[in-house]
Image 1: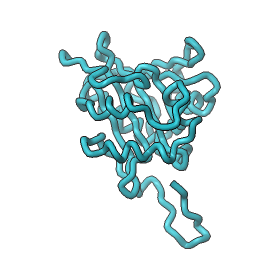
Image 2: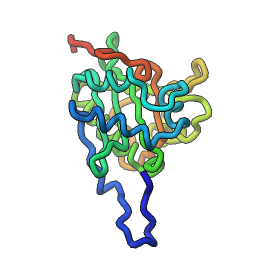
Image 3: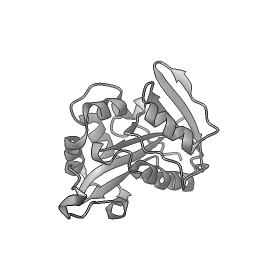
Length: 202
């Protein structure tokens, strides 16, 4: 998705032009088209593996979300999805949930991920979630710095080539936390299958 040049006299889209809402049953094709604006680097950072487009298992899992134990927010511009932020509640510890964020390349480092994480965190809190877990590939310095800004007291632990974070809710500094990385990747979400993360007892 090319961003117009101000010199061309064309309106340059900003955050005020973007609508954030829950993922819907009619969003499947929009989600597929999101791959057009995702580099291999962004996809690798999100899914911890090389893939030329959004994996089918991921698309199927989002179409099965229950909006309680598994929630996903999408950011839309001109009817196209440019960002997805999701959580999956932990079955064994329902007060915890895995967090993952993916933003198309043209919209990275523009504050969109931060806005989506703040909105998602508010929903999660109302549903009894008190902590997000996030996993970032070592070397993704941008994502690690972003999490450190939003949660300055949190220290990551290294596990199997990734930095693992436990992020308490509410976010300590939601108004200024630059949670803007290309992707906060969670291995369990990357391998998600339909119904994964569901906890009917919650």
